[in-house]
Length: 150
Image (cartoon, rainbow, N blue to C red; front, side):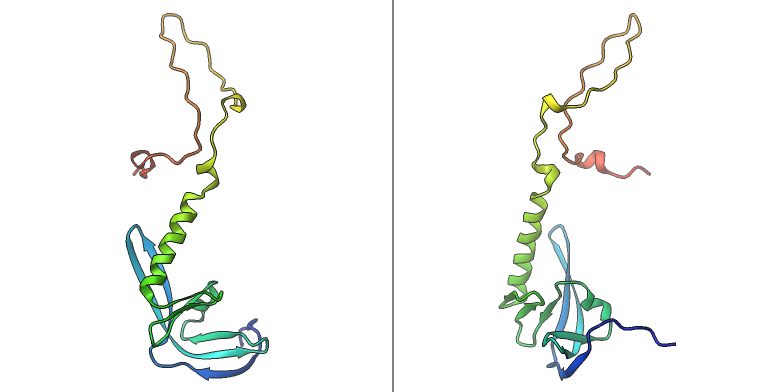
């Protein structure tokens, strides 16, 4: 039984130059890991777009995908380009840092007037009154509190 393929029909194919790779960058703090996949050729669709032909077609399913050409240039499927891998990684770091700083919960300032009222049971006689709860900021907990409990 043949698996169905929902990719657009091809109008032709072009061989890729040796040294052409589809790359994915994985960021972990300041470390960057590049995963490369050889581009064997290019499939030209009837809409005149190109799709890289690689051994693992799932690599090109993620949008946008990035290609490192044999001369060192990096191009993205969304039309952006960089003269080399270092400048691409530098821009990706900046973009990820900007996205991390633009988190909607991180930018909200709590309004004490709109805070929900918390039910507080009566304190038994002779016990000290517990401190009033502070406002909830919407920010993630600090590192010691965010650590998983084993």
